[in-house]
Length: 495
Image 1 (spheres, rainbow, N blue to C red):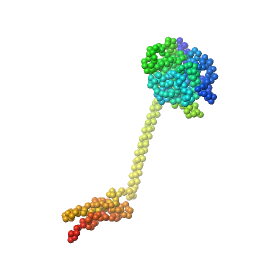
Image 2: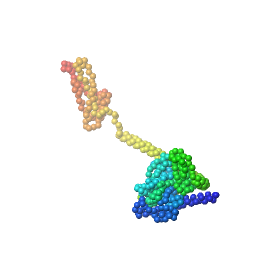
Image 3: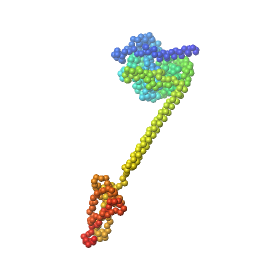
Image 4: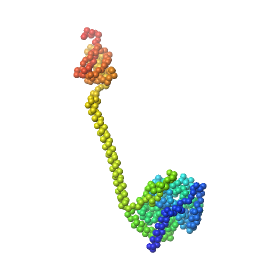
């Protein structure tokens, strides 16, 4: 029994290795010369492909199934033989797929879909902007139950992806022809199976820490059904999950409870044997990967390893490579050390930023201090030379005080009551100098040592004469103009 299990595991390993063996590319590269293709939608498969189909006991118009494995970057064409079991006919390198492993959840996340998708003839798009295209049908009933969103998720040519699986134009010409011929032969639905990787025991153990592992375990059930039967499984959705090859008298509802279901006896028996073999292989793989973690690469890291493939191509040509070449298996110790280095680098980055801010502030303060010192030194130098002394604050220039006697009324003349009042009038400055006449203590003044010529205008308020009086305690040249009241004519005898 043990030898049987080991043999089965060995066969699975050889099959998996064979699918990624680059020697297969000698045939699996599309042998198409686009320059000789007059109609891409009516392209006929090459004689070499038809010859291989005949050797594998396949009819030209027999049903097909498509399988995608993101991690390896492979798209496989499986075709039914005359016993109605499917065999792998083609295995193409996917030229470009975007995002990382895992399902597509929302518009714009750049994720390529994972799951089971039924393709009808309406999914073929001969007028695609990307040469030719086949719509994946995303979102399917499972995706909608998960409230996933996205549109126009295709398998197409042009080798450029933003959520799609993009092939070369030569590959797409053949894939489109396979689908066209199958629909022409009566196939109503082509099943597309999109997986993150081949769901072997070793790959499941290697990805056991991925946050999508529970979703992948669900997909693995459908994967296993095909591995056992070599026929596309019947797919339904209930309770927001996939169910495969389940028989029920009631319909399935994606969001509703699953009806009573049964698995065909022969299939159940075959699956039991398959799962026993798988469990043994998984235990071996877990011992192999114990203490390790698979570090999945980013899309940019995948692109970096195939950058040379873009040379001499159009800018839109953007191969992405595969995750197996760009990823890395690391021990927990290596991960811890890498994390420590990353944290140390981040700490140094923060310290450098803080130091830069501090140095900039210090430089700013020093510049301000140097400027203040320069201003103070310049001021001291001017003071030492007698320059730059500030003038005493003064009133508005050009203003002088003129004292005027109020005009007496008849009764004020009899009583002799009168108080002088001051009137300020603008005094023009002469000789274009900057001298100022300033009100100090209510009296006009001229600075000592300076000459100011003012014109005193006598305000006509019935005054007789103007007397100029010196100002007690005032500066030299400071005078007050006093006006006397004009006497009535009947007091001419008074002096």
